[in-house]
Length: 406
Image: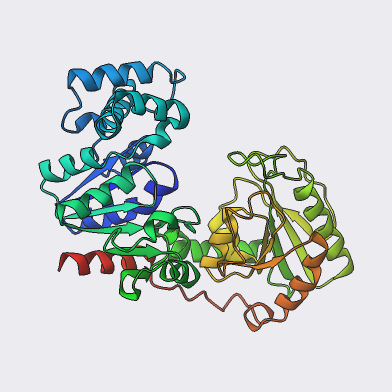
């Protein structure tokens, strides 16, 4: 039995294709889905279990803890009351067992759910379900605990890193945490090796969440879009993938942002195409932005309804601050330029991790775009030049998983 463990958001998006591959191959697995992960899996018709299905979820003490802590949650959330009670109750009971009641209460007051690391609970799950392999992503609570519990049980484990792991390297980089670590690219791998992980433990696989970008359907859609929009006219098409820049970092208030940055980038790029007739600009606003597009020669909008994957295949170069669009563009071979002055640059270190060419000022964009335009893969692009898709990340991860099952 293979145990998959994941929270929602990007974590389940990375792990769901692995579950689908196991499901299609008829291989037995159980997927422990936390928070919004269950809804994601249900949409994909992948069976899953929650904390309410775990051993001890109905114990009186667990229910008492869970009910008390769940009362603090805002009403109407995406997770059911029963699942929230089980998750909070089991996790807090584990914390009490590890630290004692007084210290557990103090830790929870200070750190909330970040205080949870339910290794004992995950060990009970592994034993009860007779698991022989644990697969989880890089989340710091129950996913981390599941891999640690696998180690204590003497069974093998795989950690699928869905991002750059700038914080998570503190524990995933420790020798002995997970038998195999799957990462985005060679730069992330080198970071883990520098922390002491052995070369045979860390594999570059990419993130399965982005495999759809490499499908023949998406590539074909990009070719159609390029033809429909008339972007095969010899001009270099720049995509500016905008996003909001707050005054302060959401979780690191000492990091100060510049809310004017997105509009300054856009205005610079608009001026750049005026002065450089060999370029056009496509502007795509983030869903959270409330900007009105202003028409201008060789400047076009990309509406939010336009498929992003097709758009990335249709353009020639992508400009971002810290948008995940930069990572997606890089994965299909599009050159990316990042403005590395965002409040989020440290969280999305694209230039450091080989995703982009970074610039330290808006005014430096022009020279980099001019250089990129001379690259053979940009200068010679024709509709007939079909993208050569690499091996999907799901297939790469499955090869590593199979090596652990051998």
